Length: 263
Image 1: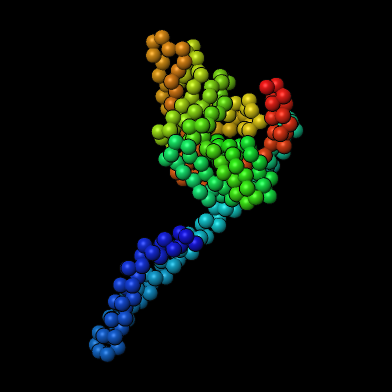
Image 2: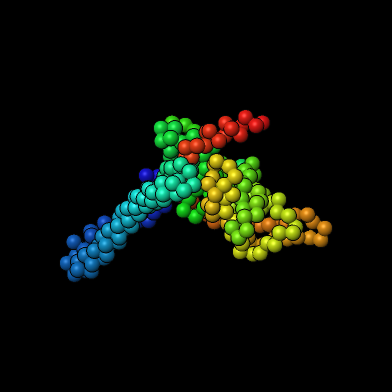
């Protein structure tokens, strides 16, 4: 509804102008028989333009509805695949589709809000992804909405691994660009190439292993350095993010309790 109002406000002056022009042409045309046919032709063009604008607005809302249905279908398909995988891996994962209703991308501590909450089974600490890859971790949960801390937040760190050899590193964000993050703790003896695929490590119950994170954009290793400086291009484009899936690991609470018991 807000987007519709924005569209109407954007074209309000033009629409008023058109209405006044049409009224003037109609008054001239119907009081003068000679130009009447041309006036009617102009009016028909205006009406056609108005129908076109209405059609575009209707198409916009129809497309949004189709996107919501597609998000639900993707989550359902992922749940089916998860049920098959659970037979072999023992992981009990459920994916809940959600829509992003609020988000920041240009701050140091970015966040996003989704339209799912405790009534939908959402809990603090659950992982969030989309069709491209990792998005973030649920931090605050209300009944109907939840706040997610994305990986483009300087407080976030994510355990990752190289898909080519399973070497572990930690993904952090330097607060500069929402399309890139830094992979740390990768020792100098490791061979890093541009285009190497980075995935989740599976070393925490938040994200299962193998979710796409990004690809190596470049790597710098200066003489005497013990670790690479690796820049990763993230698969998720946060500036275009609309729909996500919350990962509900049925064993997550048990695993976290066991880990806390070791502290």
